[in-house]
Image 1 (tube, rainbow, N blue to C red):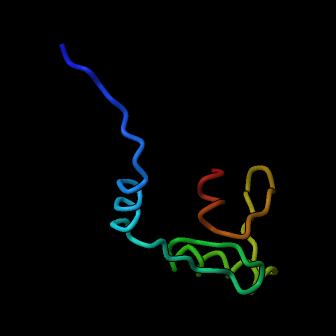
Image 2: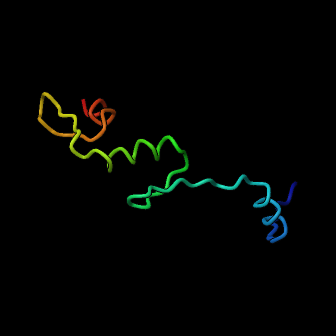
Length: 74
C-alpha cells in the first residue's frame, strides 16, 4: 500500500515560479486593454483608428468592426 503526502513547502513553489517564462503584455495605447500577443494588439487597435469602417451582414444587416467577426456571424 502507498501513502500520498501533500508537501506544502514554499521553497518548491518559488523554484517553480522562477522557471516559468515571464508573461509579456502588450497594452493598447487607446484603452489600456492588455494582450499576450502583439498581433492581437494590432488587430484590436484597428478598431480605435478607423471606427467608420464596418462590415455588414447581407442577411440581417448587423454591423461588425472586424471582417473575421462577420465571417463568424455568417
